Image 1 (cartoon, one colour):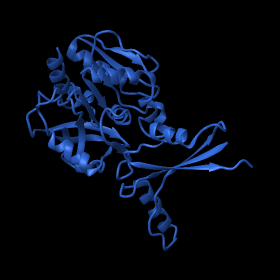
Image 2: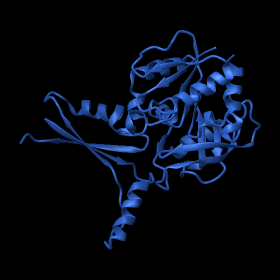
Image 3: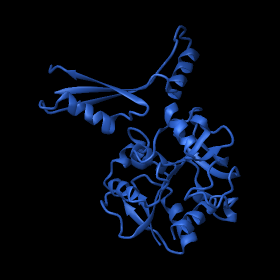
Length: 221
Length: 79
């Protein structure tokens, strides 16, 4: 299957995502520059990497969300193409309106960089089929703006519709209801602050992130 | 024509930076500070034909994230 990793000026986890996807699919993703207005034909999965796109100017992800390639990403998402946003990628997806809510400065004001425990809240999604419902996994985080916030009505809707994919099992950044990752209303867009591409092989310390890519790629073929 | 856009966090949205500034002020011995909220000021140099609605549109589409922020537009008189 053809996959694409979007690259913005200031992205720094694009190679990690590329390696992770290639490890699971056996085929290197296309690296798509932010100024491109189209995705390669037949792209069946889009990944938006972590980093500091546009130096986090204005707000994290704000400038990237308005870049030419994001129009193509939004159109693909509307057609049902799966989109995975990790860390800054999650921030870009909220700024682009593909996911609800916003990611604010961590409540403790510190950059948090360590493995954290997550609870899998929905194992039925396109992205989480290889996890067990309620399972606790460990995935690294590395962010300054991971404090997920939305109004109570939106949070209730996310919970009620099973759209909270992952929840922190410990205190990390002040996120409302400890939310670490959410899915859109059509089930094909996931944004998460933790980095599954950093938990892919024994040398990384654990393989808990690998199952996300394996499940996703199995689901989309 | 110049305009200023003030972007502030909505009431009720936790402002960790404001809190840190508050603590720092107290640390410097300033008493009586009851709360601090931090925001952004964006100055725009605009063509005279730019309408208030145009500026509000810029705010909604980019300058503010209306999920968490409010904006206020102030047109400045030519000097």
